[in-house]
Length: 448
Image (tube, rainbow, N blue to C red; front, side, top):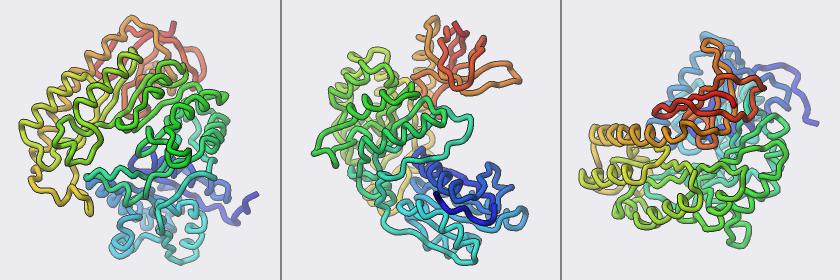
């Protein structure tokens, strides 16, 4: 058993950025809890704050720095004794953080967060520990996490890092090369989560469809992983994120079509439609390949919801390129779509490309594309009216006397919700709901 510390310091973890950071924060929370510190939600109540940062794009970096500065003020206005900064920002900019934010008492990178309790102890003792080494970390032997009470969905990181070397992306600099976890390790984590009341797991990686090729003799093991996970007691839904289109196999499509626990939801970031932009991005395949893959998925999984993300304003993107991208979005009719403006990241090949697009044009293109998607999404959503769908009930809104949940076609926090009347069961249950109304992104219905 882990030795308990003598004092009950109160620790708050503030998580920024993507779901991968949330997984790391859950693992740190488990270690902090095991050590005997008290975990609190409100940083104003904490004597120690850990800020788990994002360093992916300029906006995320700015948000991370601002949050660190906000937390630093609690040394004057609150109870804060120690401010520890973790995550991607520290992996890339540890010297800048140390030199420019003296209020920071300790730093830990993406490959060393398992040392969080030692870092907290050292920082409280007046030292200024820095644990930022090689970002290579496998998660293989770390399956225990502490999720917040009242949480029914959790992310599982099935691999870390990336080998794809997209020209716009700095992830390999912060997270290292691609490395999968074993199926046994992932199953053990899923069982641990199920024991805490989790009913939906969302699988994440920088490149999830490449899962297993590095440790299972080059074989794409995602279909087997999905099928093995569906056997875990308590897990009702399995959702897949970040499916790299170049490795979306026929076997994987069949798994979506035939396994009832695998959500009919494909999150496949495409980034662009135009071949010369894709080539500049160093993305796999071309538009004809993308169209063929989408057609194949929809033919074999007719009720699938397709999500993608696109980048506008990539260096060299012309007005004609953007017009064709807009037509592509209208034509493919994605159920869910996220749009990012290109962010010029330090030390990436794209930052050295000519013909950069100005910020005003990038924002204008993003807004135009989202307006197109708003109409597409509303139309796609309307097909559910009159159908009976399974809905995971996640919370109750007393002010409106309504329950709120999601279908298998909606990922937590990023997609739409269902407003449910007539529900009498427990939160975390999956109810059959007849859909009576559709909106641009959300639905409403009554329990059958």
